[in-house]
Image 1 (spheres, rainbow, N blue to C red):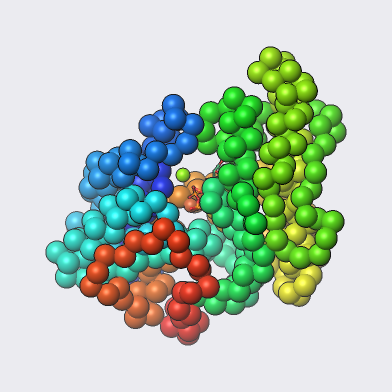
Image 2: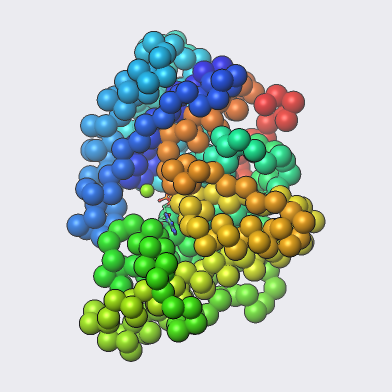
Length: 345
Ligand code: ATP
Ligand code: MG
Ligand code: FE
């Protein structure tokens, strides 16, 4: 089964072709980062308009690169939520129109399920069951995954998502959007131990997170060090202190999740899972428990069409279809998704 996947939930237009027999055939991405940078974050209306502009050219590009005739697919998968409604509607309307014209089914995919399954596109994919840490711009969740659509939420952030914490902290330090990669870059030359920030909610039981207080701690340190006048080494030291705090907090909670579920496999997904220090720390921790860590290549950690094509393919293969209407949901708990039989997938 060959599926066209379309991602437009936020500020990336992603298109890909996935084949259940041959794997990923082609994928293309246009990131709107430069468009939104001067505003310090994503402007929803600008995002929607730009998706309109990019979708068709990107789609043509993937068909050409895959050597597949335009429309020679068995279905079209698109991100139906959660995300910016205007942006989602662009992808949904485009996917529905194409599917109708080509006489194939369309299916709305959950964006976070897309992230969660992205590591399946790699060479050594994780087997079910596993614990997943979803760490992106809008979500920080620990999920027990027993199969596609068999999700049990173990814990989540009570306030800011991990990626949001990176972005907001970067902003207060005068760094451009998105902040995650910027902080990671500065942290490389930071001096360890000069700034130590709290590891929120690690001193009490449970698997929930809270990252908004951490940002305030950084703000205080930043202002005490002189604010926008800080020297470049101090900037790097603060970035490292912040990154350490996030990485260690996530590592402590993931360790707890593995121990409490008794599972050995840990999967990380979403933009923050591209973070090198996080991968190293979780890899060491999982190894120490005789477990294993799985993640996607960096470009499939952040938003992309490949993960949507893959997730859509699994569900379309299991016989799932959209209703006639156009689906776009700003909010959509992942636990509401229907399970599919492992035998079907
Ligand atoms: P969601 O998936 O929750 O709807 P989103 O789609 O905006 O949110 P992603 O595209 O998965 O999020 O990831 C973007 C986030 O990942 C941003 O917050 C960005 O700062 C963060 N990020 C990207 N690379 C890194 C990195 N190397 N280190 C830390 N954070 C990173
Ligand atoms: Mg993005
Ligand atoms: Fe995302």
